[in-house]
Length: 474
Picture (cartoon, rainbow, N blue to C red):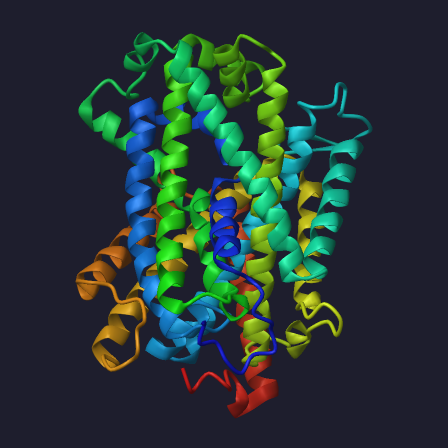
């Protein structure tokens, strides 16, 4: 049995729940809406290589998470690891940064849910409101996003097991639809399609640059395994197996994305992909229609994508609320976020806070999808870098720590994970890298950083020596 003790949270998640929560969070909706963009950026084989590169970074970081989560099975994940290694200030920076990643995903899914309805309901966009950065915002679009935000937040409010049951069902549907595309493509695909769009670029240097452009986007789409450390106190699984489940979920997600991209490139020519991107942007949906010679199959795939939105959204609401809960419990932020509901035993105020942000995000329209992905990806890579450095530090300073899941060649793994995650984070802040922030993204990151400084100042002022209390026994 799990060794989690002294927690107000209930251990309700079993092995299947853990795997489905993490895997469902990672495969989500990106493979439906972004595959065409990836192929146009890096080519079919280039995209696969980009995902492998990103997957290696996430795998290395995942190894550090797996060892540290089993050594410190408490809600909070990176918060606990960075505190044990570097103390309160580093812990606050790591955790506050991590929360931005969670908020980014939650807001992304709210906007994505409304976007996908355009392809299901004819004449969906009704009631023009205003224009943001060239994108028109409609009342129907905003209303659907808000209603979905309320419903998903409510499901999480009802309890962790309720959200896990939903996750198991929807993740199975997503995987089934994705495999359906792969099977259809394998049956009628043409190798000439694949060979004509393996890479993008006129030279080796250009090809490598385009592969890296894809690789640097992948952490956002492979971020879901981080939900497991946040919900560690609610997991009823032996700790060594918990570490293996985290690593397995990463490998499954990378393979899934690679199979989908190859299937699209095998069944669609470059011209067809370009036309699809120009018409709807739903390249994956058009690919399955070609694979089965049936336009109605696009609806099947879009429904699978809709399930993907819900699984990712569901997972990150669960994980993000636990991060806020853990910070509040440690007196890093106001204590109201540590309140658990008397009946459902969920951190309902933290959930409602994240739910409120997912309601606000759609008011900025579809352009928010672009801004929030880059801001969240930067935050994700920075937090991973801090966690990986914490892993190395703890291997040196606390070699006696019990580690149910032990990583071989740990110091080398941790250093390499730190370098790769740090490199990806730096790419966002250096001008001219094709990944650097636009001013709206600087506003999001800068505003969140300023809010963190103010929250930390208030917490230190209010709690004094009790700031970060309760974490000394990690």
